[in-house]
Amino acid sequence: MTGLTITAEGRGYPASGTTVTIDPPAAGLPAGTGWATMTVSESGSVTMAGKLGDGTAFSAGATISAVNGVDRFAVYLPLYKTTSKPTAPGAIGGAITFEPNAGSDCDGTLSWLKPAQTTGALYQAGFVTSVIIEGARYAEPISGPALEFSSAAGATGSVGFSGGNLTGSPTDTIAVSNKDAMTETGSIADKLKLTMNAKSGLISGSFKPQAPILPTTSLSGILYQKGNVGVGQFLGPSQSGAVQLTPQ
Image: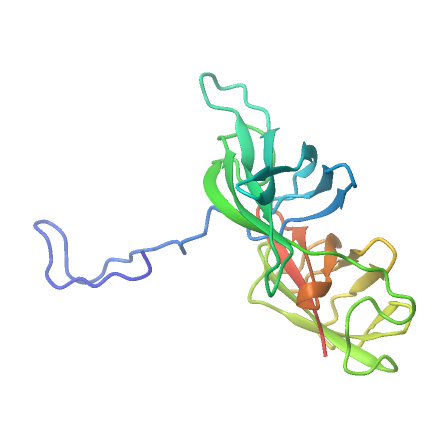
């Protein structure tokens, strides 16, 4: 629900002077962008490692099989711990299919369940949701940045933040050298430090949120060359947040 209109007072309830608070649709769901690296061997074995959208680290292995002529593999990962029985254990699972698309080389939809928790700072109430996963081949560049900028010399980009208990969606700017070294050029004074690893395709760094003012916060993610973007996440006091690096 995104809005509410009162056309007539109910019995015992006034038509005015009452405040109704409506949470946004995804208020109880992780806002961080999950990411992972994937390796596919010649024999068809798959290994994955990364972080889910709530910051949970994971690793998985599977074997590709052909179903009706289409290569795919199944993923199922038990997650989280719960002491409240008979509460169902948490998990994420689904099927990922290899197929050439404009924005990906493989994709799928995973069902994700986190039961209610009595510990931990994030999402103690638990949640049930589904997430779309997209993957694409990564190629280490011979020279220059791993993403495509308008100019390799003096390249610039923007780094946007959302969720993670932040007020608004601040955007910072960076300058990128031909070795993927990044220097903050924006004026939002968040002490952004960001590194792109051209060999592994990983992003790492930190920033100090200013609205509200929070401790220095780590961020992590990946370079997604087929979308020419870097994506990832950070963890706020009670919510995860998303990071996006966009070349200019």
